Length: 477
Image (tube, rainbow, N blue to C red; front, top):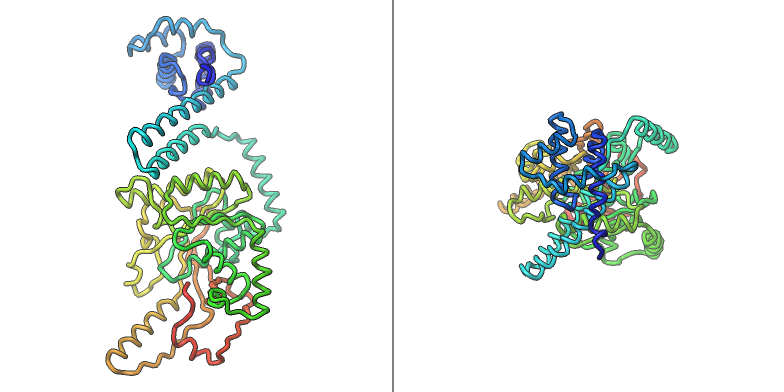
């Protein structure tokens, strides 16, 4: 590799000379590069001294600069004379970019040395080596993508263009990814680019089913979906999605007990799903750096991906391996930054603390989220899934168990319904109102639908619905 591949001293001298010739240029240069981006240490010293003079509202000229360098024992006469004798640039922007480009390449070369150090000299486990590499690459990529201020004409033009695009959608109030639920869309206007959405609930409330229904809506709209499933394999996720899509009971799909008509419906749905842009990673041991790396690569290969889902946040691991609260903070912040970087909404599922179980009103609150501080801070939207019948069923089971232990017979007047009302409680909405979206959960298909929508006809082999449901044997959620 030639010397000019990693640095060019002539360009560095010319940029510094240009600042001396036109001091107002310093702000433009400092917005794109830092002192560490200069290869020569004395060039770094000169640029740092220029920054000190700028912050102190002192002239950036030959005399003041030389004086500042002498004060801090950073003055090198030969280097200084080379800088001031260099010709200033007419097109500084291209040269500034060149300095940044070579700085990034040097950092990448240093990374190769670091890889050898941790992999060979320190003999760290491969997972730790990958963590070091991914973290450093992420730092380098962030340093390479610093954004500039956007001026008023550009912002006005982009805003008017966005309004016209919304008009083409038919004034339906959705500016992001359609959630598939009318009342939720009314509160959120859909999930928009850069948002981190948390969907939280106690076990068995159906939060996985809810986000899979949202994923199916995005797929049906022609969008791509990426899912990181840390809790269940990809095949189980697909089985649930096919049940919801075909209205074939989940339990029937699991055991293959279907009529000819249902097999035909399954074949059609499977063929349709096979042509949609759904990607699932079911590695249960993934950490935030690995997730970030995988999604970046996937997004580059498939730019049509419009939403990512993580099931669920507390199963992820951080990189510190120490304090769990710090790890969760790292994960939630990492997901938010990733959403911003890739300009797409990220939906992360979260468990709730047991404290909600001890309250009379068991509707969740923000404080019920496990390690809620960082999650609540980073999230743009927080949704709670609540189904009152889940607690009613548990209460009836306890009463039945207690009566049996006392040698008594307990006949419950409550029966588990095939469809039950559910609430999507919007606990936080950074860009809109909080409130409640009312929906309905169809248990046999693990599917949520809008309240008031046309119900799917459900045919039971056993006409005695109360008898069937009294055993509480609905499929798991």
